[in-house]
Image 1: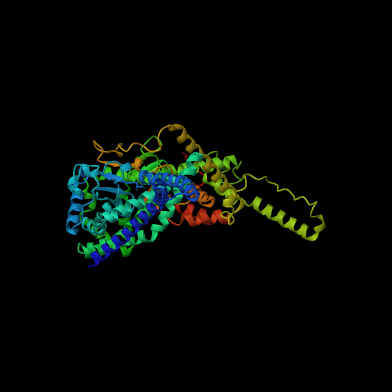
Image 2: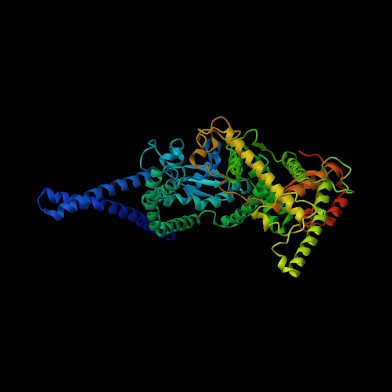
Length: 631
């Protein structure tokens, strides 16, 4: 009864959407109908006289203009390419067991099977209609045993949507858990096959695509003017369809959820816990582990396998997650794939493209990295590159080792040079004394305000003032820390600008913005059984989903100072770079992870007090006066 109620609500709201479309068509045809009546009345000598003649001269051109405009709007709506999610296509040859499981699930739910399966680097699953002609022929022509399609690609028979599965689910979930999670998603193919719901969805997708076409930049003034009218009409129709379309989708979801209760309902409750856990592990892996590698021009090629390692580590640390690790003895859902490593690599490359904006394929400056190589290829290089940048900025600022300091007798880059600079309070104390003297003179002799000249500080400024956006962020730091942070921000901005210019120069300006869809994914087997489809989605504004906002000047200084400390530890205390699955790059000393470094670094930056950091260095046997190896 619940299934029928939800389906009936969805069909009723779909009819409301179609009625809005019919009313829009009627409004467009109304002037033409009036013009036909006036012309027919003139031909039969029934509507004669000056008034009717004037009405015909006014209404007939108006009807032609309205028809022309309506035809233009309809043409844009019909030909505009609907938005499509970036995914990795999975052919049946690459995952026969997965297709078989989805088919059996659809048979148990008594709904049409999805036409194809694709993976997305996110913790979500949904159905996506890709029957638009701009998306190419539907994959059911080659896999008609899945969706029951015939051999006529251009017929109007509804084609089942594509099932999009979050790739982390396949590696973390067990086969039974994945089937339980996908049950309500696959059940949605039943309502999607209804002609009224399918027609309403096609109309809404066309309106949304038309709005996107009208909003596209880089068009001439004439095209912008014409498309502005198209966009206005499409937005007006979308506003009118907003309420019934939302209720239609809620009815479809209610019907699918009610139908899916008959399949693995108890297991689905347990599996939903795994969905939240997988999402937490995936987010932590991307922001703490993958992002530093992406910034280095390397992309981890086994992100989905890393989710399992991250969540296993979480279960070891957190008592609340202890029971989740015991599931690992069961068959993982990735066993349903013929070559899990190849698919994981393709999904990892797509994740780097979506969340960081990397190139579409591997190259000299964009190469994959395995988890076993991560400490040496990413962590060690990252720390040494940051340390080298830190010393370049100090050189540009004219910073020299303090007389009598630990770094005054060595010519190489040392940690002591940085510590001496950040703890040198001479400029800060002198500036405070001069500032107090100025305020005292101002208060005691206000008449001399216009002729008063501030006493110059004995040490000139070594760095330009920090950018306005960073002034508030650097307000709680020492002057030396603020100046060094501003210099690091400027240096990093110059490097990123140079890298962007180099990539744009190396690329062909006349080439299309999207590569051909036939190119297989990384390390793809013979044929293109597993590949991303970047040509079917707009990749001009990457990253589509940036993980984190740009780092502030304070964060940049903290990262570079931490990197310098880690370089000194590796070169003077036999420490090694390591990978923590939950926290990213970490420093290992005697095989154990070091802790409590960040608070001591922040104390030096904010208060200029090196005592906690120097005590920490002495405890681990790190010698800051020794030169370190830079990148």
